Picture 1 (tube, rainbow, N blue to C red):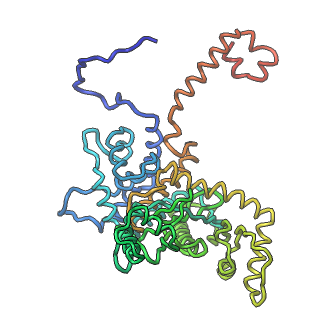
Picture 2: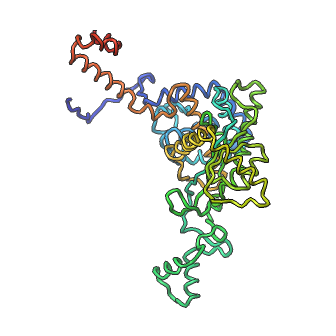
Length: 459
């Protein structure tokens, strides 16, 4: 093809019709998503929820609640981790500006306004927005709620290990090692000597003794790659029928799965109860919602213990929890624990149990992959458990809306449309070249029966 040359002097157009503005491939996706939100009167809903946080006559110009929540949804759909990145991307994209609701001559919101609005609106309001998304999914029969899968992962905190201090003396790590070296007889310890002393110590990074002054909620924990960082723990409750996330919690990273599951299950009951109340009030029409929420629970072996199996039995939950190999067990004076463990073992070895184990790896891990990996939230830029949970509730709400969009238009993220039109054009061009090369006689005989559409095109 001929090489085009960039013009040094270009006459700018005085008027440009908005219909002639170029649109990206993602524009139809966001237009359809806006239509869904408008059909459910999302803006009126969040404005009514957030009215108590705004003053009519005082203060700086505010960010409308509908725009605020749409901006956080962009974080999921575009895979942007920070609010600064969301603001920058929105100011640079016509499709995103149209989705949020900015006019062409209107300045987009700065990241500081997004952060201030997040701090202004409380956690309960974000939780109600998450429940609103679940109601929309239930109206499209994407929530059953009977069988729930629970799993957790770690989020790297926005806090450095080198900044930790002692809880009792507020002494930093370097000064603490220096005092240990001086106590052992080294007056002026070198860096190598400090490292040697630190290497020989036991329990040197205990959450009982150390904390980060900038983010006390962050805990010292092992990450997925084996490294040690300050982290938070995120736990999902996933509908095993549709893959929708029914609840999300942020908990201390040093607490085990056998402890944190209860808060997540209680959050699941609360959210499904809100959906059931909306169905009874006639706000949601659903035939899939089960009358007994979280009747069955699926989890990996990290959730298995005598206590959790007993708790599941007392709560009336049928557990399908993978059992680790602990060898021969001693059940003397433990009849309740024995019965609960044996009942769970019998269920996971059955046909349904094996099927749920396969679905657990598919559905639960998929939610983490979309939210944290391609969604960009594996490392958080916020500090404080409540701040992170506010952002994550809307982020996971975007994941649930993606499930709805996949049902409506076949695509759950706008990036799936990237290169789609060029792919279709290349496919049509390749078929046309093939037909013209082989000639019209190619579309005769048995080939005409096998490829009727191609035969008609050749004819």
